[in-house]
Image 1 (cartoon, helix red, strand yellow):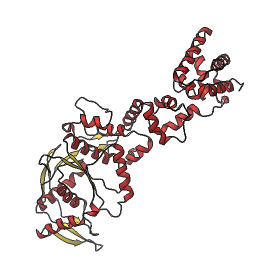
Image 2: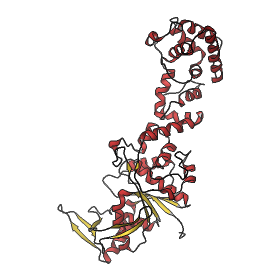
Image 3: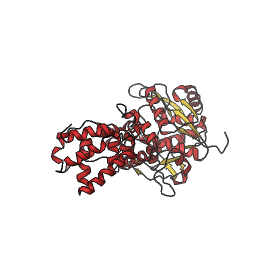
Image 4: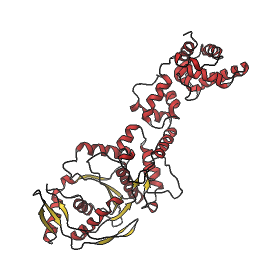
Length: 429
């Protein structure tokens, strides 16, 4: 390895889903490596034999890939590196720094007896961080597996990790890890401890705040670029105060590690939703249709798929909302549900619209807009208010008093279906 090469690591623990805090940590390590032209190492920290599962591991890898966070080396699984830990443990034992003890249940574990009980380390965001009062701690558990801190130190040394970016909740772990580096004679990486992510009440973000996992956000229809764009703001700020980025590539180009901060960040679900809605509106209809397909219960009207997508695009905040919005456009309409809302002039409006629809196909939005323009001209000649013209037609076509531009309704339904709905609303269908 070049002495100037930056090496960071993703170190997920496959004991549950990938939560937003873990995704933020992975994102910042990824951006740090890409900024410096460095290497991302993937290490699976699966020494918890009770809770670690291959299912959780696969799901976390899928979530990282969905976010666009790729690794350059690995995966290395701690469960497959027992010989490495055993050799490190033997070195500590030779130096007289370990002993075995049993707990009240008779379970034997190996402890480290550090030469010093305190010390300090230089944090990339916090400066000098001191610690003291460290008691003896477990490095090999009673089941023979290494403890988290011991395995992390051995692996970071073997993998030549140069920088570790993680949350401040790990500060107590870092203290013990520094003592382990000293005991093993290794060079510790540079640590950067980010501020906590807080909920709206100022407490650490958790499920009680509605904090969903990455997989849950994915299932709800958040775009990966929206989630990445928002997570980047939880502990980092753009020098030009930008808050949204087109994709991970643009974010990596704009990212400056000097803008990382140690102050807490507050997770705002409404802000994330607004960013997601903006990203959806920025997609081309073709791309949005591709992303919507897994969320749709069935095919869209044949030949009018992109018109349907465009019609719902402005109202979509999450992809999972598409089925209900499409149903509002194309689902059956009960004229009796809105009969009492129709103005007295609705009869002649329905007659004129049905007449105008004869002989048309409305295969494009342009044709539909031309039709609406002609109806507006007729309405002005008749002295009708715009609402008295368009509101009855919207009710007839969808049964609802709000929705997308009127031309989209005609274009999505087509001339024949539009005429039949209007005639039913007028009582002649």
